[in-house]
Image (cartoon, rainbow, N blue to C red; front, side, top):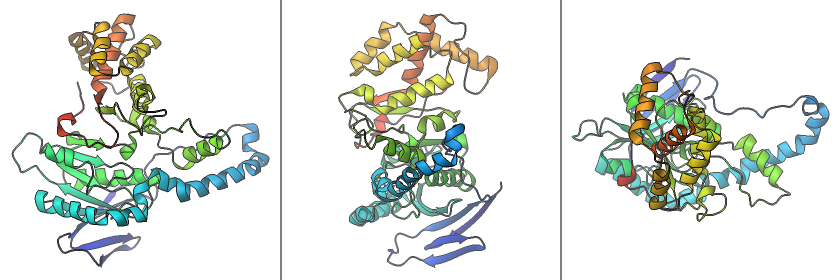
Length: 404
């Protein structure tokens, strides 16, 4: 598929149709908040590849009888997902919340334009949803970080106007923020497929219009943003409705985070909030119930399958269970991890092969060496931040992912 681009500097919002585009002035906007409207269309009828259909089993699963039997569950799941289910997962799309936050959002938007010379653009994804964005360009300023673009993906009740853009802005990075479909100036509904389509148009805009190279782009995602938290069904669901909840989530709200992350070949850094009360299945006091642990383990198992044996998994889980930096360092030193040796092994493997993940490094290694490599990699791929879910990330904790 090819790409078609149009750029229209104006104070108008833009809608895109099959025959072209129409510009209409959006009433009630202050003159300060003018927008440059970037019209993007992927020349393809399909959306971004994201979700897989549920596997069908042979025999009864394909029979007419089974289809009739499961029809009520499918209907109820659809109604749940398209009514209160979607609003529970993405409360930022609720109109009442947006109305209450409107003055704050307008102030935040004005601040980004006035203080940071922000450029507001509206992008149209392949599904027709209009994605509201804000770009702050630091490439012409002095400093080591201006040439790096940080794309910010907000949480399920976050908006770029008052969200996580502030952290990379404080660090001197170029920053591109965007709102989920159905949030503030973005249209549509924040279902997983629409989220993927929105992220796709944002990336294409950054590369083809703003002129950033892929290796100069960092994606910074908070909470549900960018599918950084692993999809789960909480264990406190009543047994009588658990099958229905499970089916609804898998069919309509499946944020298959680990699967999507494993498809990515670039550097990754996971920030685990050790007192997080949201991304846990029991409570913040049980750090092993933090879903970031599962995301890390699945990523390491995919990228380094020969290293991540059962023995190595036990060592990494022990490291993950540490409740403080002192305990974490104690576990690390207890396994006598030699950082220089681990780095040299990985660099040698990369130089000799230059193959994509998964790697076969560790195939002919002793258990002790695999444990060391596993812990070394775990510490490179994940950093702890001792705070709760909604605390803004300070610039001191914002780090570009490690790479060889």
